[in-house]
Length: 303
DNA sequence: TATCCAAGGTAAGTT
DNA sequence: AACTTACCTTGGATA
Image (cartoon, rainbow, N blue to C red):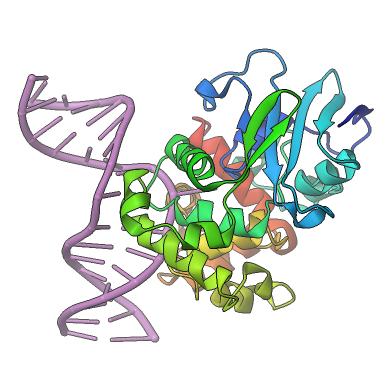
């Protein structure tokens, strides 16, 4: 076990762990007091995730716990180099100040960035990101989160760490072996066969979300739609929240309503065309950062 | 208490 | 290629 802490006071643009993990970007972390993931936080809660074991020699899943207190990040991990993992997963290497400054001035965008200063994007493990956003179709944030918990507890490898038992996110082969009926029993609804068939594609080596890495942005988005249950919107989520395409702007219901209310000239009918227009409006290079701020701002009642 | 409705959309069927 | 429609489930709103 590794425990440690580190000052994060000098990170450009700051850092806010709670908004980063609870803004609806990642469904692969959980809060210790789990109950009200969507509600107000009490003090400085611990968050934890279990990473796929591919990064370690033993292939054991890796437990990572973290909390933020007084400008410091504290962690407990089952393996060494926890800070490197956190820096990667929570994009602590982004110059958030430069990103916010490079974004074109705009009333709604400025309010969103000001209201949630320190929120960063995440780099989720690709398979978990893919599955969790397949589950996100027509679903509320809290329930998407509950679905991933159910999948992990039912199909994920267990890991004992620091006196507790944790569940890793299921491997592709574990989910591929599940039946549609079993997955429907976990309240996945019509997403159940999508999850099973996509897991099968990955488990059998026919395709992997990492295959998109290196392609141009729009080509990468098209490439991800080969997975079952993945259309343009979910593909954008995987590109943005896992594969590092910061220009990706998922056109979800919140952003579509923002376009209707604030940027009607960006509505071009087709997804690809509207996407180009709003990307340009949000600042091409980091349009996905802006999307996430606006999404969270509107969803939490901001105007 | 019963009914309705929308939730970070996608696949399949029509035109 | 662009445009409809059906789809599971559930918590909260409305009657």
